[in-house]
Image (tube, rainbow, N blue to C red; front, side, top):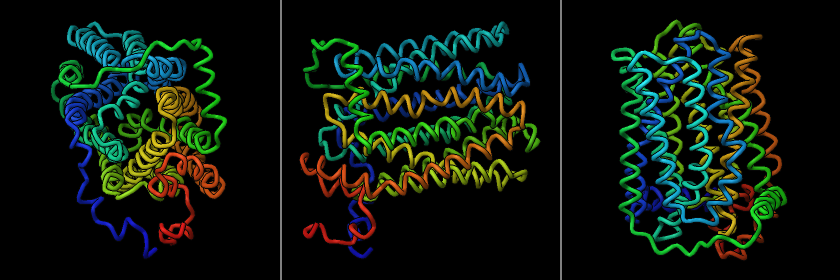
Length: 445
């Protein structure tokens, strides 16, 4: 495609960090970067601790279910609050409660009184926090941008930040768990929340114009569902995310089993597996951040789902560590490309007064469905084995990506009028265009 702006305009690559021009976003980026390293350390330590105490793939699934099912149940309610209330105080509250959760977990582990039911109960508490934190945080990003045109870059940088932490956190956790035990990871995670709380308090934000809406809470909730599921592009993106989260994402819950039983490794091997996934995801987000526009993201979503599914299938079949790492790199790349591209299209498509509710549905589809998949994966692994479980999930993700790709021409026709009205086509609407149309110069479209 000779006229593709991605190839002719190198500015996108030269402005890889352009969203950091906004002071408030710089604070957010720095604080979240520190906090997320702690979060990934805790996640690795928690999974390894559960498996060390129980040796059960089913209980790994139960713990994952307990920590994420609140998101599925409560995220839509959080979305209504995010559209009505000031988002910064909500984030300070959620981060403070998460700090207390990590500190309590550390106390139980370091005193040697930890039991499996403690882990499940504290996972539920953190899940309740995340049910409100994720949609509020996702919809808060646009408030931090001095230049709204930098939003897509900010979303990509957010994903890069998550996956940079995903790379560093598990590697540190693998070393610390092997040498000092799981407790130190929980201590460091508790301390890391201070960084994001201080960053939020240091921001200089315009006075919030959000008021407690007069619309009934349940009516506002129903309006958000109707808006999302009544418009095919949003509905199809959320459906694909839900499929991948249900049948594909739970591969991470079974990683301790692969590390110990399939690859004959240790906690350090487990850390390497997760870190390699993070490298793939980080590479993906750097690619997305370097793009000069969001043109072509519809095809990226379809291809990423296929790549994610193929990577999981390869990982399920591998018994050789280097091959497993290569497959996880592809899995990480595809998974994050899918999520970040979907986030970008949704954020640029949605009306501002419904942003919180749509991002809560994004959170429910991406995070909230995972616990059901985790429980299902744990049960299937007990009955049919971990390899058969992952092969089935990967195949379903691959088929979902192919089906989404077939829908792109029809989705494009629905997206175009919305972005013409908003005045941001060809910057965004071209993300759903076909390859043939992308070869036409913008002035002739």
